[in-house]
Image (cartoon, rainbow, N blue to C red; front, side, top):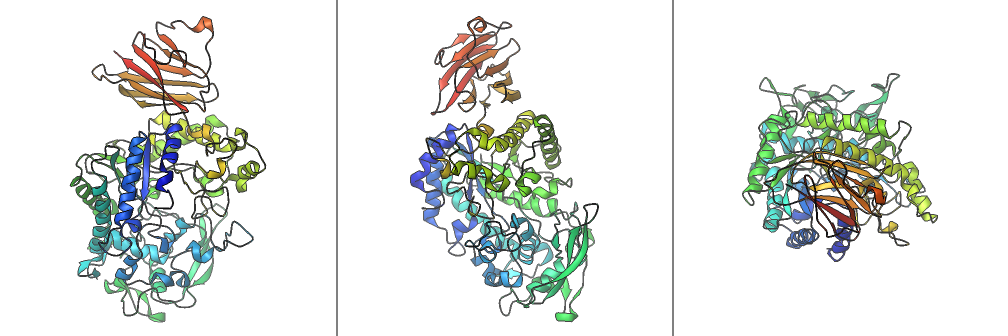
Amino acid sequence: MAKPFPLGEADAHLARIARWGFNCLRLLVTWEAIEHEGPGRYDAAYLDYVAAVARRAEAHGFVLFIDMHQDVWSRMTGGDGAPGWVFGKLGLDFTRFDAAGAANVMQYRYDPAGAEARQEDAYPMMSWARNYRLPANGLIWTAFFAGALLTPEWRIDGENVQHYLQRHYLGAMAALAERLTGNPAVIGFDTLNEPSPGWIGQAMSAPQLAATREAPIPVRAGPCWTPFAALQAASGRAVTLPVLAPGADGAMEIAGEEVANPGGVSIWVPGAADPYAVAGAWTGAGEEARVLDEDFFRIVDGRAIDPDTDLLLPFFQRIADTLRAIDPDWLLFAEVNPYQLGHGRGFPADMPERCVNASHWYDVGILWKKRFDAEAGPAALRARYIDEIGALFDAADPARAMPRLMGEFGIPFDLDEGRAYARWAAGRRDEAIWAPHVAALTAMYDALDALGISSTQWNYTASNRNDLRIGDGWNQEDLSIFSPDQVADGGDGARALKGFARPYVRRAQGRIAAMRFDAETGLFEARIDVDPAIAAPSEIVVPEAHFPDDIAVTIDPRGALDLRSRKPAAADRGNRAGGDRGRCPACRGAERGAARGRISTASALNRTRQVHYAGG
């Protein structure tokens, strides 16, 4: 496999990530990569490749979980995920999606040779979010989750569309799982990255001016699609759409109109009937088209559709059953659509056992504006992040029934039109060029530490470049903490290293009660409620980025531990409050008695050190 993560380069990349202090990987794969040749035809070479990467990850000390990734369903609909043959099975011709306005695809809309790197009029940045409301995504996601409920007569090879699509998705997942079972580094699978609800919860023809609890996908300025308009356009009709714009109070209002699919291009293959029309949602052609059931996507048999209990929960259970038939110990890293969390909708009750709440969070202002405003100050920013992240995870799982891991968060590194890249190209190698990035990441990690939430940061892209046209390779995004452009003059490829290479308790001899790092003073504090029945020591990762010299380690009688990034003076080298203080590297490999336990320090891979603490 040559792209995007060549196996021959895997050891170099994995060693680098371990050197920075990470110990867990969310490893991305796609359904398309596994089953691109056709139904049930799995790419054995690709499966072998992923298994080989997992073995290399194990050798470098990682645990990992597999993310069956998607963004707006597939490459053909503006992102990645499902294989192209699926569209033919659905009766859709994806080569017509762009002409019909059914999907906004970068390959059609963005000119890589154009004068402007950002081509917002033709291909808006973060275009994937808009794609969820366009006809192709609305139609397919509704079929994936609610085909059996809403379109029972829509069949593929004699099987209902929902059952067919989910069976093949789970089949691809199982094919990969079979290759990975037995590798102790693999601890589970993600359910499905940021699944979309499709049209569930939306009125058939009433324009939606704001996201709601029932239909949480954001409403943005521009053409306002309804399911009825989308289905008409998909069937080859030009449709007039209201155009939304923010009013004086910031709320969206109708500010005009425009015609979509003016050429009347149908995205159905010849002879295919619209299954939503067959099911009674709408009828007619041209000027005769009319809605038959305004609540088609909201109410069935007099009862409101509960997308979480009716649709998502059975999907989660099918994944659990599929994977645990292969390895009963695997965890499920569960995701719901991230937008619904802001409207008070989280995971359904009665989730399968051993699920992890792997919700996603971003600072939306930084993500969309590609600006970092430090005016509020680090304390205010940290407090806001604690409030936002805490509220999001509480909304996702208010009973705290599941362990918590932030499945995605991060920042764009092309802030301010790529100012850091320009400075790097001009020869700057000092950390100051990454100051805004470090400040933002520091506040995010501070919040996660305060809340006691583990995380996997988005992302590490091996093929990334310091180029506004390239970045992470899609969607005009650039969130990679690594770029080969940063491998110069002795650099190791890191961007804003001090923002993410931080000390933390990697393993605890008991329960981690608190953890805090002050990057300004170089003080890391942790409190572990030690369980003497656990024989193994606690381990604390101490990255060289913040601890380049000696480390002063202190444990007080209550079992709290701190490390300082400084060489302690001779007068400070004794016990403090009855505790024990050791120094690294001078005491490396030594063990000394302490009031609550023992400390030893040991070297780890290259630039990361570990501090071991064994309580008694």
